[in-house]
Image (tube, rainbow, N blue to C red; front, side, top):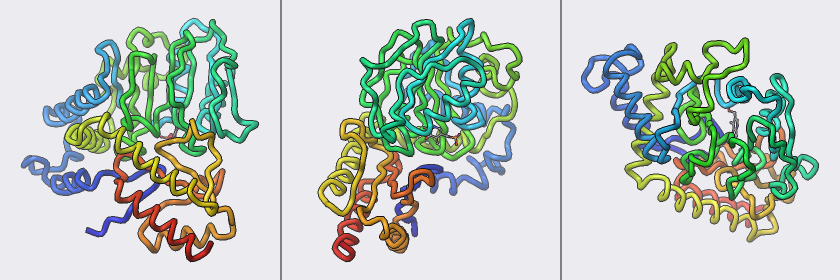
Length: 359
Ligand SMILES: *Cc1c(COP(=O)(O)O)cnc(C)c1O
């Protein structure tokens, strides 16, 4: 086994045992003489794989029965358009909170379909905190409020679920399955799979059923949630391999204690890394401590001229993908479920050693 420690923001690390299982059954799935990738999506075998994945996700997140679980394509980015198409209904505006680049992209796309009311923005502060809810300028006539619980690039994470009297819509791409979520507080949540669910190619949408079925005129059939819901997310051919692999990850999570257990491990990993950053004058993180992300930890070297050396030495030490997003620079370590405490220890040990040699 020559697996390195992988801190990629996405597509991100997957559990070793899941990859090994997929490898073991890749060529001949369960004795059928062909791969799961080579089967009809309408076969009894694949239907069982798909339904089991959905049920396991429902169990993990304790999803109420009046919510649909959809396995779609087009990534989280397509949801930026699909959400207003489906959820505006008879309303003429939508509320958005802007806490980072992903919120900002969601806002830009929604503007193509409706009037967007940005209730609060931390942009002038370079996205380092969550603006105080008491200052949010909610429009009670809006169709919904959209926010990004975890900003993957800026490393800002909400530690609460807002309650503003509108249906809540949340982009959980980089923090779904990292801890329990009370789905009943939301109208819709969505997440691209390639961070904390499985491989790229699938986006999971969990939506309260009374909110769907009233798309705006001109909406493509493929973009209507109610069509996906009626067809078990198989109006057309779904990304079967990605769905299957996500299902293996759900089984892995269940076998490892579910989301309460994940939350405890994720807390310990983030605490260990932030302690290493805060315990040194050599490293820094600019985010308001209350809202520091557990999943994506951006950090800087106080001497920015050492960044290239840091990344090269880290890679040589088999600590992969620590470069920050191209828009913000610096470093970023993503600590999704498949990143072990051992990996975080290897990173903090490396950081201390690098500081000794270059500090
Ligand atoms: C990665 C990410 C996206 C974009 O996901 P795609 O699947 O590439 O479209 C959107 N929102 C958040 C919070 C993300 O982390």
